[in-house]
Every structure is written in structure tokens, then in C-alpha cells.
Image (spheres, rainbow, N blue to C red):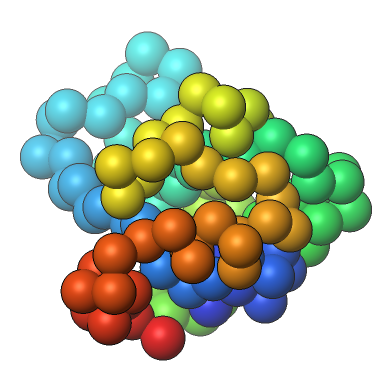
Length: 119
């Protein structure tokens, strides 16, 4: 997901934050029935301002790579992407920049924080 986000949006890799949660057997339902299929759900929040083409390329790359890594069919990968204005997101203690303004924004980080960022 980090690689896809960086490749498709051009945002620095450290802007991709990924959390994994596993549902216990019997905790997930589809259409009123307990789901027993091996499925992966991705719910992503991204900064508003990117084209539909970029967002769909991001989702397509994630779909392909997730299905391959987890060894499931694309039909068992569900991806939801939601735009959020950068003015409504804080990371690293500051409001996020608009897409394309990351380099200037990063200069405002402390030298210690910048030194510890993944490249």
C-alpha cells in the first residue's frame, strides 16, 4: 500500500500509514450471513485534490498487489477510498499540505523528526 501510494500520488512514503485489523470468525457479515471467505478490506483516507484517474490507478495497483501477496482473487479484495481536505488532517503535529506541496511542508519538521522518517 505504501509503494502504491507513493508511485501513484508522488507523496512521500511516510505519508502512507497502514494499520491491520483481523476480524474474528463470526464477526464479519455480508448480506446478513457470516462471511467465511478469505477477504481483505482496505479503507483509505487520502488528501483531497487528486484526479479520479490517480485514485483509480492507486486502487488498481493496491488491488493487484494485495491479491498476489495474500494469494486470493481480486474478487476478494474490497477497497474504499475517501477524500479528506488537507485542512482537516493533522499528521506529525501539523495540518497536512495540499497534494504537491509536501516538500515545502516537510522543511517545517524538526531535524530530529526528518532524520527518523522512512525514506
